[in-house]
Image (tube, rainbow, N blue to C red; front, side, top):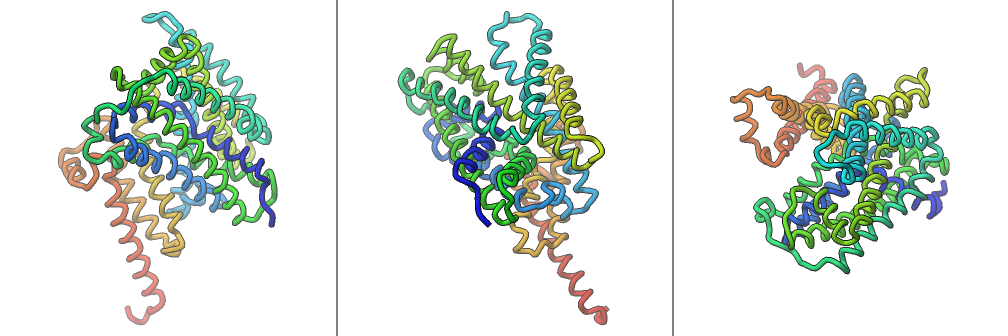
Amino acid sequence: MGSLKGKETLTIGLMLFALFFGAGNLIFPPFLGQEAGANFWPAMLGFIVTGVGLPLLTVVVISMAKDGVKEIGSRVHPVFAVVFSAAVYLSIGPFFGIPRSANVAFEMSLKPFLAEGGSHTAFLLLFTVVFFALVYWVTLNPSKMVERIGSILTPVMLAAILLLVLGSVFKLEGSFGEVSAKYTNAPFATGFLEGYLTMDTIAALAFGIIVVGAVQQKKALERRMVVRETLKAGIIAGVGLSFVYVTVGLLGAKMASGSQFENGGEILTAAAELIFGVPGMLLLGLIVTLACFTTAVGLVAATSQFFNKMIPNVSYKTFTLAVTLVSLLISNLGLNQIISISVPVLIVLYPITIVLVILSFLDRFFKGARGVYVGAVLAAGMVSVVDGLKTFGVESEALMALLQSLPLYAEGLGWLLPALIGGLAGWVFDKFISAKELNPASE
C-alpha cells in the first residue's frame, strides 16, 4: 500500500495552510485579542475549534467521498447535489470568495499609500488585472500548484508573519486589557461563533478536492490511505493556522492596551507602522497579498476542476479563464457591494454545509439512512433561508417571533435544534418504511 514521504506530506500540508489562510483569517484573531482581553485564552480556544477544527474535519470528510461535495449532496437527493455543489462553488468562487480576496489585497497593500478621499477606481482595475493574471498563470497547471504554493509562497508568507510577531514581542509593551461585554460571560462560546463566521468550512468543500488530488498525484493509494494522508496534511495545516491565530491574537491584545480599534485590519496596520514604520506597512501588504493570492489560486483551481468534471466537453483551461475573468469583473464592483450581494447566499449555505459535513462523518452510526440527511438538511435549510431573506428585508413578524424563540438563535445557531429534530424524525421515518417493507402483511 505504501504512503507519502514526509517531505511530500509537509508540502501538501503547507499548501492546505496557505489555501485556508486568507485575509479574513489574518484580521479576525487580533480583533478577538482586543475584545476578549483577560478572557483571551478560552475565547481563542473556541475560535480554533471552529476556525481550524471544523474546516479540517470537512477536508477529511471530502477525502472519504469518491466524488467530493457532489457525492455528499447526493445523500439528500441527486438534484439537490447538483444545485448545492454548484451554489457552493459559485459563491466561494467567482461570485464572492475570489473577488473578495482581490479587493482585500488591494485595500491593505496598495490603497494605504494612495491619496485619501480620491477615486481609486483606476488603481483597483490595474491592481486586479495584474493580480488575476498571476492567479491564472499559477492555476493553469494544477500539477505544479502544490510546489508553487507549498514550497515557495507559504514559507515566504510565514516568514513575513513571524517577523511582524517577533517585532511585536520586542517593541510592544502591554498585557491583556478589559474584557468587552460579549466576551464576559461565555468567552469560549463567543470565540467558537467567531471562528464559525470565518466560513472556511464552505471553502473546505473545495479545498478538500485539491488536497486529495495532490495526494493521489504523488502516489497511487487506496481510499483508506488517501484519507490517512489527507488527515496528516490537515494536522500540519491546523498546527500552522493555530500558531498564527494565537500569535496574531496576542499582538491584538497588546495593541489594545494603548488604544481601541474598529477592526482587525486597523490593528495590524497600526502595529506594522508602529513596529517598523513604512517598511512595516509594506510588510503587512506583502502578508495580506500573499494570503489573498494563495486563497484565490485555490478557489479558481477548485471551481474550474468542479465545472470541468460536470461539463467535460469544456476544458479545464477554458473554465479557468472564465472563472478568472468573471472574478476580475466582479472584483471591480468594490468590496462593500460584493459583500452586500453575497452575504445572504452564504447565510443560507453555511448551516446546510455544517449539517452535511457532520452527518457524513457520523454516517456509519445511522447506516447512511437517507431520511436523516433529508430531515436534518430540510429543517436547517428552512431556518437559514428565512435568515437569508431577512437580510434582503423580506420577513414575517410571526415567523421571526417563532424563530427567535429557538435556542441559540441570537448567536446564529438557531438552525441547530431544528436540524437535530429533523434528522431524528427522518431516522424514525426510515425505520418505519423499512419495517413496512419487511412486514407487508401487517398492513
